[in-house]
Image (spheres, rainbow, N blue to C red):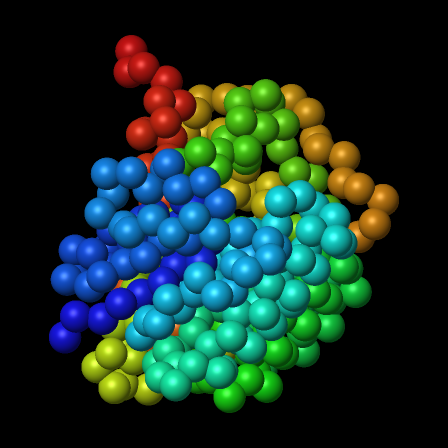
Length: 290
């Protein structure tokens, strides 16, 4: 059955998700401030800024909402506007509708966790970040938990993919993370982000169980120095400089995707190796064969 899905914050991940949903025969509306990027995609554009007066009245009646907004910048005011305040406003609007969405999916982050010593974390682990980003993301999650709407929180780990190649560029500069203390890296390819969201929507459409929370990360968490060393080996680069860690202790945890995999989701890029190989190949980073 054809459903209508609204993607709020239809950027990089939203475009991939939207095209996947269109291919499955659904109607997709993409909301963003500048809709030029949606031209020719088949996604119906909706020019929308949730911070503007009257914006909430423009929200259409739909079957599913995917809240994919991102903050304009890394500061507390921007995060509050994008996450708890923006989501609460959207929830309040749809809670008043005669026919509310079947489900709202909120894209959160593993930054809500405070674990720093390589602990294994999953959906049952305490999410008690002390940083403003994690705190505000958690506040938004709790707003969805309290809402009368059916909702699912998806906590993505470090997202990478085409155009998200900072780590590759660091390696090309000869830089590598320190070995001690080990800083565990948790990653997910952009295409798997879209795949996970489409998968969960599909499960709900088929009236199959969908939990209220998933940790979405790939199947291999390794220390960051090992990740960078592997990338360096593919690029034929010899690391010459150890990146100086910031004074505050960096987050170091191992995220567990068991609950997500038990839904039947199959990763397109099961580990960072397959994913970064794709990014390096498509981005022209790999050295020419001799």
